[in-house]
Length: 171
Image 1 (cartoon, rainbow, N blue to C red):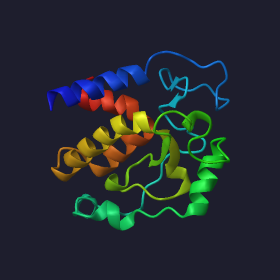
Image 2 (image 1 turned 30 degrees about the vertical axis):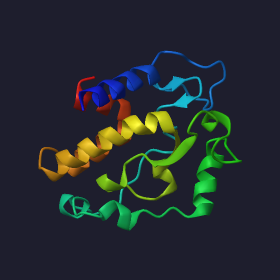
Image 3 (image 1 turned 90 degrees about the horizontal axis):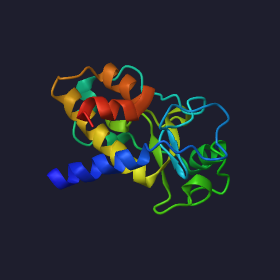
């Protein structure tokens, strides 16, 4: 477990290295550490501000099988999200051309009540998705044990998941 934590911390440091690419994918400046050549750590906030299913409670999202029951992204929506991010040919192209490609990620994870709406989806490089998954799992645990309010967890991850990771894990 300790080596897994070190690996995740090292991966996060690698991914947040201050290396801005010559040509940005998105015109507006991104937060410090959000870009490394070929790695998009944070989604474009204009395209993916995050979206949640309204009226959910912690009891609902903490029910076993919740996320699997609500996971459904139509192929057409998947293609539209990739195209909006400048990847009209989909995964394994553009900034998703690296090892592992990208996964179509829910900014606010389904386990935290995130929706399948385009406003909550973005192509996230696999390397950073592994790190974000750890945060999603921990925030879910915190919500389900009453240590964190569901709305607070949703806001933390939607606002800046990298900052939330550092806050939660102190890394």
